[in-house]
Length: 431
Image (tube, rainbow, N blue to C red; front, side):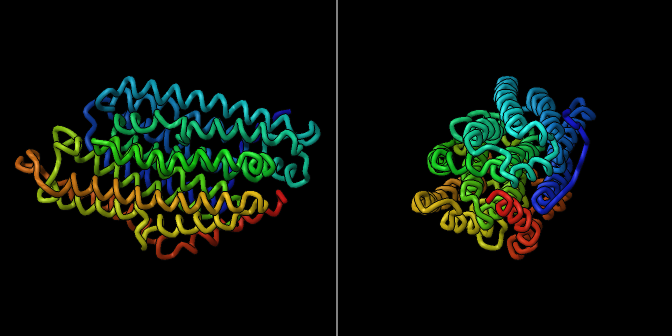
């Protein structure tokens, strides 16, 4: 009996993700502006993506958890393929193929997880599965294989190296509201799944593959960070930047302790806000200049002061400047890695991983500040042409995204007090 009961519920983790989805959706709709054709379909696609993500975050049933995410797959294809720019059709097919492949692998992993529980206790209800895991009914010998399949499935959706190539091209071709929602919210589905399912239900599997995950997340941070520095277009730089920052969230997940996973959850929220703001301003710049190549831009701050100010705030948040939520979250992730909850055989490995990850902070500061300087300062042919600043009406969504980041930057305990108890229950139950 599958028991497909439609059950919704929230704890601190899902509440934070739902809040992120609501904030970014409002900002994305506000920045959408005038749509040249099929306006109703455009907004319907945005709502389906946001609704799918929020539904997945609130689902307490494996079937609906998976189904809500799949609800957002076709709208993503349509937004890029119909309303995108550049080589949009190829990008739309590429992202769809990658995400569909990841979804199929994820489905296999969820079926394996369901069948790993004794038939008398099988259920699609996450609460029942958590109770089964607490009672030791998921055999430790089966956990590594299930965890690996889930890691690959979720990893493709998250753009974990080496499954990352779809993300930069998709975000560079997507309309700004679609990039805001996908990079800011929908991509967090995979990370949420690891925190909600894989880590608490399969602790032995997580322990078994912790070394592999460390190698992959460091590749996300160091390798992708260096690739990001080499980018010559603003939109591609932001796409690779989004991939790079997933490595820090993976580091918090891999730490498998309350401090690291709480930091990972807050960083998911913080990254969603900052990348949404950066994609929003980039979309407005795209409407006004002939090219997003760094060599063709420069001096835009003179004619677009509001855009320069907003983009600068997004840059400062993304690089983890103190006062923004990214800073507090990254500190928690790094310290969580140092206090890794696994055995001492892996402890020193995590210490080295945390130290290497700190170099990623330097790398991200280099490519972000460099992009900011080359876009808004200096001189170019574009700076000699009359360019209108972004509409003053956009001050509200800009203020909303920035205020949320600053609020949790100065008062991270607001999130910690709600998220930490959920992870405390997970880790207590899995021990």
